[in-house]
Image (tube, rainbow, N blue to C red; front, side, top):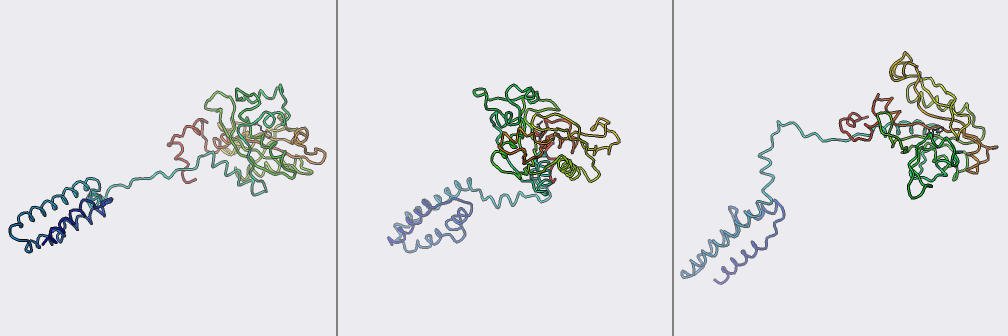
Length: 342
Ligand code: PHE
């Protein structure tokens, strides 16, 4: 007889200690203690074994245990409210699906990758250099010593506590970094972020991106430069593209040139992009000045080479006819979503 009372106590203990951490465990609890074949029903039928004078006590005990099970179940239901059943009832298959934003490559990334792939096909390898640079690699080694007027061409952000440290104004610092470490032949492409202290407007930004080319070997000539730029222009804009090199000046190249490509928007018929000239400027180039080779301990009598630099924002603006450079850094989804799937 004591046995049945013990069983009830045992079941109460199980209820009190039941670990219910999920809707599945909650359901198992319900089946065991409250379901149609629950364990308490078995105990109820054991009332036969209880002597008459204790039947009332026994019945009350079981009812208590039953209400305990019910309240535990109620309490846990709030937490794991039989979610499956509930949501199953609420699913409306005719509702439009929730669209998930897949994300897109940034237009600057897209043009960078395109240019890198084009040049990798003719043996260029990607090189990188620091964005926080010292004066030597950004200016002095590139034949722009202190007080050289050409420094004014690039309004520079200096680190205030140390005038020797600055944010690189161009990716040409990578030319120096690579030539200091590596013997020719050198054939690198260096994409990266650059900084100039410019007032932000639709046409200019203080943070932008460039891609730099450098090729150093024996007997590299201006003809190699022209052919490489023609290849790049035709791969980028189509095989009909023509190039034009206009004499220019950079302290670290001699001779220097500005690269124009025939306008790929109007096919040289005249449009706003080329300002009715038929040509658009895409970068600067030239033969590496022997003084720069010397600064990197490369023998200018044995080696020669060329360098080329272009702005990626400008490239992307031409390619997709984007008229405001600020769009690239504003993270406006309406702008960025247009590049999905490209
Ligand atoms: N570094 C130059 C600039 O930012 C571009 C350039 C690179 C010119 C390589 C010549 C050769 O204006």
